[in-house]
Image (spheres, rainbow, N blue to C red):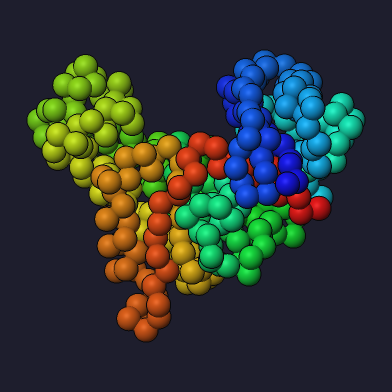
Length: 314
Ligand SMILES: [Zn+2]
């Protein structure tokens, strides 16, 4: 049984785990991310890896990080939450732990884990969309993770879907994640509540009376109680998600879509809307087998498991 270690480098915590070749986590540990001193992150990763490698034969280490990773899976060119620029993470960590190391984009790692061990088992063409504060993406084509020429493919959240639309953190206007993510859900709910506070009575009550205090959990709670504005915000997000998936199907023709990320915890409030919007917008509808839209199965550990498994493919 070949073991590798996967590390999920988050903005607040670093989760590391020993993973077997069936995608099972056999041991894990958690450390706070030294976010104030990005140069110390490699040391913290190395400490976690050493702890887990103690008494075990480890083949390789896979690191998953949010950001642009170069095509050699070595350098983090740009990481939004850790202030990394051209960070030679592979070299640093490999030097510290004495094991082969690869670096992967976190959304790609999640997609790979779902493709191999989760909701995409048995499918060779998969598009994975992680709906959190923004939108992350991962694409598996013909059984391989698609990274693009320079390692920067599958940034699905930054397709510009609205000309001159809402400003995005990436510097462009109208990106998909400004309409179909958790942040978009909150933005839409606030806009609607501001325009018609009476209609948003329950939502505003839950949020303590202030539009600016409406966040994701408030929208979710209010939607469950039937608040029309909260439900409309979910419907809008679902509509945009379905449209985006139909565009992706037009380009990639996957066998299935997998939706994950924090917002999918409330999937019962929006998944039907996504499926309806997708079916309505799909090009060639009625003349093609529709890709199934599934929910991710591996939860928060997908990034760690995927990074560990991708470390086997060197
Ligand atoms: Zn963008």
